Image (cartoon, rainbow over all chains, first blue to last red; front, side, top):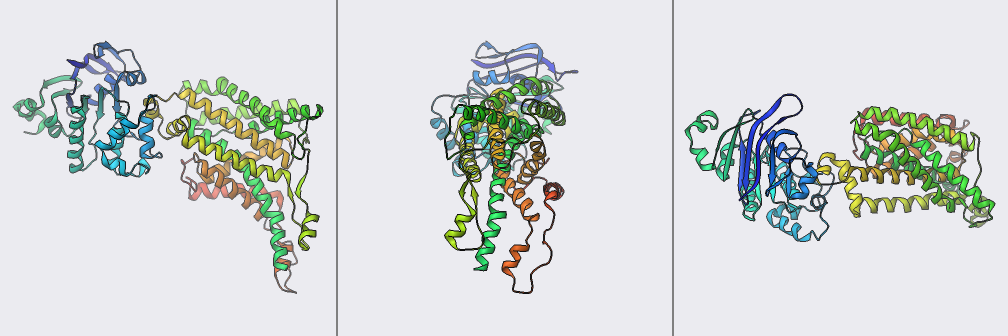
Amino acid sequence: MTYLSASNMTGGYGGADILHDCTIEAAEGEIAVIVGPNGAGKSTAMKAVFGMLDIHKGSVKLDGEDITKLTPQARVAKGMAFVPQTSNVFPSMSVEENLEMGAFLRRDDINVTMEQVYDLFPILQEKRRQNAGELSGGQRQQVAVGRALMTKPKLLMLDEPTAGVSPIVMDELFDRIIEVARTGISILMVEQNARQALNIADKGYVLVQGRNRFTDTGDRLLNDPEVRKSFLGG
Amino acid sequence: MEFLNALVLLSNFVLIPAISYGSQLALGALGVTLIYGILRFSNFAHGDTMAFGAMFTILFTWLLQSWGISIAPLPTALLAMPFGIIVCIGLVLGTDRAVYQFYRQQKAAPVIYLIASMGVMFITNGIVRFIIGPNDQKFADGERFIIKARTFKQMTGLSEGLSIKVSQGITVFVTVVAVLILFWFLNKTRTGKSMRAYSDNEDLALLSGINPDRVVMVAWVITAILATIAGSLYGLDKSFKPFTYLQLLLPIFAAAIVGGLGSPIGAIAGGFVIAFSEIMVTYAYKKFLKYLVPEGWEPDTLVQLLSTDYKFAVSFLILLLVLLFRPTGIFGGRSV
């Protein structure tokens, strides 16, 4: 069952259109990855799904419900969570306070979810009282993802989560992402490290100039000679 | 013996006034730093907001005094302050609605808000002078001194007296209580944390579902409370004259910047740094040195670095130095 269905999205930042007829889908517990060359419109597609960009054609449906007209905050309430690429934590607040802010809209007891996040990212439990701004890049990314998970989302969107982290941390981060997906949360990820990302992807979308170019499972895309030649580097 | 006299002299003319003045500046600077951190602009109207709040406290004090209500030995102004605060809250929320909300919708640059706040400053100043007049107003009553100089001399046998005014004692006490409550609010309550989050990373705060209108409203309410308390205490301690509050803007901003804009701890530290600097640099140390140095070495001149007329020059100088060499302030707030 497709949980997220963003079809035929067309729109831009106000001037010319950046996305042309772009379709992104993700089923429950599935990892969908958007890859493509620089300037292909990957982050733009993600922002359109989240509602930070207006699309004048196409629609975004979550669990069958049309949410195209909703603001980003309203979409968070519907079960979407978004982790931006930069500026994704509250640097002067502690790790624990960051997680509390992630769950701001929730009125029930958040300790259970917080324990789950600490289980997933044990280093955060260790540094729970430290200011998020003092952590290393990889640890900050974990805080950012943890913060998004506090809303108990059904769809987690990550904009280049491994940007600027070392290869070992990148592997660790991808392992965690797989663990999160296993709990039934759909993941939508934009990635520059196309090879590693497609490796863990159930579905891959290759965007070129705002259009879908190739859409297939991660494995098949990795092995497709045309995809490899045009942009995975052979 | 001479050493004790010197110490008492310094406490009486430097230490105690500086602690009192520092507390008043700290409260004022807290209001400025809060607005800078959350609404991201320098609120030049803050001095006159203090005057407005103090003015209504005075009006309510006169009303209570005319009804014969008193809480001697404490000044009646303490009873009137809550009412002054309520009116001041009305003023700031009204100005936000009438002036700043418009620019927020336009996503104006911070300097536009600053100029707009100067307009608010002139209008508020005019309103205050219109209602209560430009002259000195007296509204203090109750006991004047906690301990009088003469009593102190009798108790200790020293030739120097130490006096602590009731208003000075109240200033320090109220400041401590206000600061404790403010810090509890910012660190332990959900609304307070959401305000810190909004100040830290506005976009992420909005993404987390924090309501920006609510944050703005609470920020103004807290600012009005702090401004009224600071203005009333200053008026009780020294005197109420509308123009004085305009002049207080300089040391208040200096305090907020020195401590680090956006940092509440910085505002408090900055307040005391500025107060102590102003008073210590303009104090005449002749008598103090007379107690300490041996016979024959007494200074002829007043040994005063700067005349008290130049008190504000001290804040200005410190402000300049901080902006040149460490613009983020002591506690590393935002660069101005």
